[in-house]
Image (cartoon, rainbow, N blue to C red; front, side):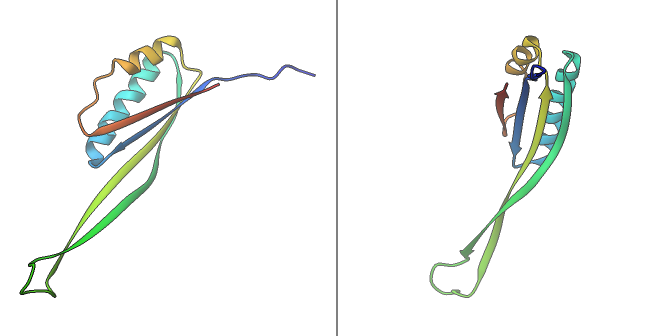
Length: 108
């Protein structure tokens, strides 16, 4: 039997309400990963979650008048294959704009 090849990979989920900020953050992450010598798969756009909220315009008189608001949550998935120790260190020091959430999961 041949020994199994263990490849380490890092999955990064990036979420934001603003798709422009999200794309800028993803570009920074991809550039950083490529500069440190890792291979990048993605960014893969995940489905946008839309939450709609309906409220009354008035509390008493105009009961039929309503307003709708929506919140869109944009998500992207990146996979960095065979990350170097320098890659993880640089990712932790990366300056990402406010309003962008980043989840990093390391699988071996």
